[in-house]
Each structure stands twice: as C-alpha cells, then as structure tokens.
Length: 501
Ligand code: ZN
Image 1 (cartoon, rainbow, N blue to C red):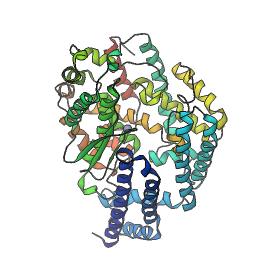
Image 2: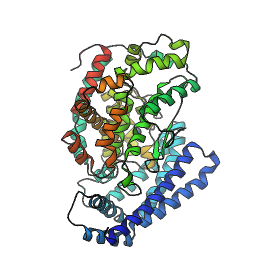
Image 3: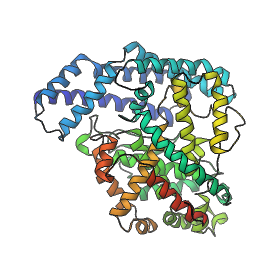
Image 4: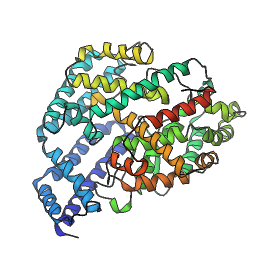
C-alpha cells in the first residue's frame, strides 16, 4: 500500500480507538455507572472526545490526506478511494468550525439537557427558553461556517443525513403527510382492542421472551450484550462487540419486546459491517436514516407482521401465564397494529409516527431561520398537533418539552427517523422480490434469510457508499415515500379488515 495512505489509515485507526473508548464510557454511564459517577464521567468523555477531534482536524491529518489523494491510482471504487472521499468530506467540514465554537456547542448542549430534565419535570417551558435560544444561536453560527449549503438548516441536516437537503426532505414529507392524514382518519373510524397489551406481566417473564426473540434475530452470546437502561440505544466497538439495551414496563410488555427488536436491528447493522472496514471511518453505519431503516424494519415490518405474530403468540401464551393462555395470533396482530393519534412521539404507532416528525421538521426550520421565536413555539406546537393529528396538547411537558433533542443542540436530526421508515419500506419491498417466500420464512420463525440479505446488500458496506448510492444499487433509485405507504396500507387494511386506498 502506498506510504501516505498507510500512514493516514494508521492515524484514522487511532482516532477510531479513541472514539470506541469514548463510546464505552457512554455505554457504561447509561447502563452500569452509579449516579454519583456522572460529574467525573463528563470530564473523561470530554477529554477523550477532544483528543480524538484534535487528532482528526490537525494539519498532519490534512497533509496525509493530500498525500493519500495523490497516491490514488484512479480506481474510484477501491476501499482506499472510498475512504479518502469520506475523510476528505468530513475533514473539510470539521476544519471550518473554530475550536472555540465546537467546544461551546458541546458545553451548551450538555447544559441544555440538564435544564431540560427539570423543565420537563416541572412543566416549565419558560425555564428552558434561554437555553433553547442559545442552542439556536450557536446552530446558526455553526451553519455560518460553511458557504456550500443553500440554507443554514442544510448544514445541520448534513451532519446526520450526509448530502441530503431540506428541500429534498420537504418534497418527501409533503407527500408523506398527504398520504398519512386520510389513512389515519380512515383507521380512526374503526376500533381495535389493544387492552391485552396492558395486562400485568412480570419483568422476569418478559426477559425470557426478549432473550428468545433477539436470539432468533441473530443476537450472538459471544459477541453481544443486552443490558437495562432508561433511554434505550445500541452501540458497538467493532462488529464483534455489540451492545443493545432495553427497558421494562410490567403494564405494557411491547415496550421491552419491540424496543429490544428495534435495538437489535441497529445491532445487526453494526455486527454485519465487513471486518476489513474495522478501525476506519468506513466501519460504521452510513447515515442515521439508513441506521433507523434497519431498526424499524425489524421492529415493525418483521415484529408486527401477521406471520411473526403467529410466532410470538404461542411463546407469549407459554411464558406470560394464564392471562394469555388463549392468546390468538390474530388478536395480537390487531392489537400491535392499532392506529391512534397520541401526544408522545416515542409511543406513536407506525402511521401517526410520521406526522410527529413532520411537525418537528417544520418547526425547527422556522426557529432556525428566524420565522418563529422561541416564545411562540409552544403555541405553534399545539396548533400543529391540532391540525395534523387532531388532538389537543394539555401541557408543555407532554408537548414541546417531550424530546431531548433540541435541548442537546441536536437540530436537524428529527427527519432521519421518518427517512428511516421510508428506506425500510423500500428495502422491505425489494427483499420480497428477491426472497420470494420471505413471509413464509418469517411465519416459520426463520429470520436468517432476511438477515443475510440485509447483510449482503446493506450492512457489509458500512460507510462505503452514500445513502442514495446504496439505494441505487439495491432498489434502483433514491429515497421514496411510496413503498412505505403501500406497505402500511396493505398491513393496516389487513389488520382492520378494510381496504385502505
Ligand atoms: Zn433507532
């Protein structure tokens, strides 16, 4: 291998090691650390992250990058070429942000989160106002560092969904909204009994079910861990050390079950990345939208399918005791696909979920671009929940204060959740073409075929390709709304016993 390229790879490997150390500190903080460890832990994470960042943005990295570019032999498809393309883009963006601003963004995000926890608990939006104003001001200054984006929002979105623009998202979301609003209205005219989901089930019994199901999906005891947490997440330190988490509610077992299936979907992505990409920026999921497509495909398209409910129901009957002895797969299928507009995004069903995201996408652009003041935000939030979901928001705690993202400075992040649903819809449709008996496999509890298909087409590539390039290879086009909507109409029509068009 050419010398400069080799040196660049060694440097990037060290940076990835530091990032893994930082991620391990964060995993520990959210699963094992006693509460009083928080103060020093923040310092430790900050120090490791700063050293990693400094190594990356240094002139030495830039010099090696230039040298490696000169050594390329014109093969744009080699892993060296794809690595250098990715690193060039990240390095150019990162080096345009002054160190002071980067540090201030991190500090303000951390302070904002702390204040948000109390503001949400006390239903006190006013206490949160100055912190959100500060985060927006810093986000504008961050966007000002670049001149290659059409609007400031694009600079932020690009951090989570590289190369995607607000204009592109708007086109997709307008189409999504136009499809979802009548679908939700139609579903609301039918009643579905979801009460069986709220029967009391001890956490120990739920754990046995979750252990079985994640193992069926590909959880490998030699390379994975499942731990308890408050806000579930997945992380990994290379493809042979995957950490997933879930939480337990004894009065609502889908919380743990579908939460674990969701995080296992993220974990399978990380576990499936090619070993040759480890310790390099290519060795991680490509975008948040692509990552979320994997979690939601497993959680919803597999986990809430008619066929898989036939796998779940007898296991639930056996493990959850007499209340569930007569559980019919059909009753479970209907209950877990119940559509009902609700206040809280993370508890929303598959159909209404998209509208929660559209609302946030619209509002955060208006805030960032100065069309809406922070003081006007709660009223605008409530109005949009009324207009789009037909519900009244009783308190800010269950309204504008429900999500952590804006408090942490994560502006431009929300769209990736709905983009993930769309991508999942595209992959689900394509998988059914290439695996003709996929539904039968799932109904038989055989998930290895789907896992192998996703690994071959998506996972193994890590960040080699952009989302659009990868989708072009697999489904023959960019992100699209239609497959997701068609899937949803088909399944909900089936569950409700009506034709949804
Ligand atoms: Zn997720």
